[in-house]
Length: 344
Image 1: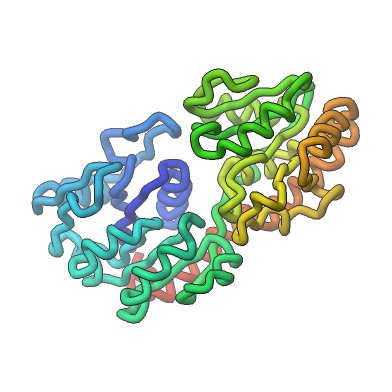
Image 2: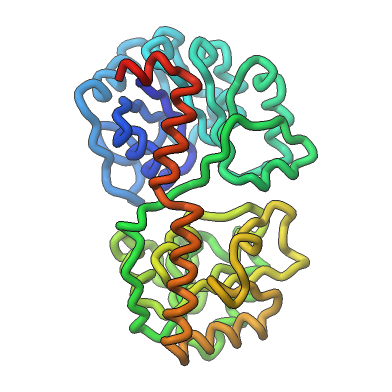
């Protein structure tokens, strides 16, 4: 099968493009990835085969225009280019579907949700749903939206337990990853500063200058090593969306998870505190004092940390393993374009 994949998030793009390739499909990605390398440095460049390189060449030859991060209305997607594919998968970007529906809908169009603007984006997508657009959800909790327009599959984001594993916890510190913490989550960042007082912490991510423990951007390998070495993980941001990739990666690695989710800031679509059984495979805390107490207990008691982390890893594998995603994407793609899947 040939897949045209539109992306707004490099890490998810990297995960899903590589998965589709591993399933035997050819992928042309309108995102950060191309045969010349990734536009941003969050992940190593994806290798593309000869057939995929030809699809990129055809896009240019047919007059295609795409610049990552630009408004989708500035792109040009030639209908003849879309004809080269069996299915079009659009990550999140409702405006891309709105602006290019006439060209995209020459093939089955799949809207792949990512948990952002859940209530809002259902509205402009309704007309395309009624015109045959398929929907792959990333969380079942999206069905709680008052504007919900249905789905054809729920396929969670995924990680490989063979990559995210091996927690040792030898460093008595807690770890957090978040970009632009103060700018994006000002109240959560304020709590993070209070939580970290007197406790050794590491904060990875861009534009966190002046925050306790801030180390800036790190490579994917450095991030994996921090997950393994740190005693505990604090998840204290993104409370309006179901879950995030850094949560999945940390939990699957086996680092004990402490979630700081005050009820007055917990959004209706936040799912993480429903996935964790408090005190068994992680901790759910609603106030700064409790979060501090639990982090300190994990830092002081490595055996406790190991027990909570191991249980969390097993739960994460059941929810987010790449093996589940392989099976689910295979079944879904066969339902959308069965002839193309059978011929690959």
